[in-house]
Image (cartoon, rainbow, N blue to C red):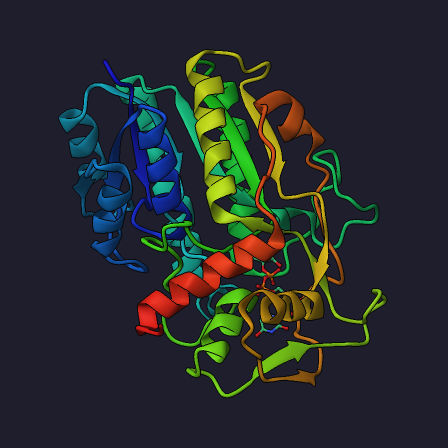
Amino acid sequence: MKDLILVTGGTGYIGSHTAVELINEGYEVVIVDNLANSTADSLDGIEKITGVRPAFEQFDLCDKSLVEAFFEKYPKLKAIIHFAAYKAVGESVELPLKYYRNNLVSLMNLLECMGQFKVPSIVFSSSCTVYGQPKDLPVTENAPILPAESPYGNTKQICEEILRDSVHSMPDIRVIALRYFNPIGAHPTALIGELPRGIPNNLVPFVTQTAAGLRGELKVFGDDYPTPDGSAVRDYINVADLAKAHVSAIGRLLNQKNEANFEFFNLGTGRGSSVLEVVKTFEKVTGVSVNYKIVGRRAGDVVAVWADTSKANEVLGWKAATSLEDTLLSAWNWEKKLRGIQ
Ligand code: UFG
């Protein structure tokens, strides 16, 4: 009997890659998504890659009665990976309540049903944003949590607090929070990838869209940071590598290998790359030039952050494997496929 895993937000960017890795490792997957920021096409991609079409339920996790009905319909559910959330930093500043309602209520509904229906294990999508600009780099899981720069970032911090408090009151519940650095790239088959709506906020989709001719020019936000080339530094992690860490986390929870009921791990490569390094590496591996202009800094950006990944390496037995070069190439292959570029 295959263990059944609920992947919320499973038609989205990281969720779809994780569904693939779970299926490849022999799990059965059911996806819940309201398609607020994704399309059901990714189910076709998952099926083409794995040969299995996961079950799919389209509804909003903020509706408690629908969440309850879901748990009733799937009594064999063993664990949850909770990706479903709004994630646009800028929009969260404009519409904070939209973010607080969606990101907090969906998690609380899941936690209540986990207690009610005795599904004890959950992996939560968190973010390195909880560290703000850390004093010491690379950043370890013991670095202090700094005040969030945006309502979006605050929802990640509050969700971690909700989880921490919930494991105290519900001692059967086991949580692993995964703090992602900057996930980029696409599945090596180019059958699933990131589908940003409108103008991309994130660097790599903007780079690939500029290279594809959809955007006239990439704006590089700042070249006067105290970094080797003056542009800001991040830890860019391949999305398929990132997805595999979720499979390790699920295995740890299901086999009750967790040492505490609330654990958290940094997921990155351990290496920082600057914005200009990303652009130049993209140009080198694809042979396509990217029209860019240096402009002023973007409000709220940290200077530099990259992960100390030793905890995930040692405890989860997971390590990022794909190079920045191959990851940027995968992002370009996905963009070319979307735009019908040969
Ligand atoms: N950047 C540009 N030009 C762009 C887009 C981004 O120069 O058009 C730069 C940014 O200024 C930053 C780097 O590229 O220095 C990476 O920016 P992203 O927007 O891709 O990623 P961030 O590190 O800003 O964002 C990440 C996650 C968010 C999270 C945030 C917290 O994507 O989910 O960290 O700061 F909230």
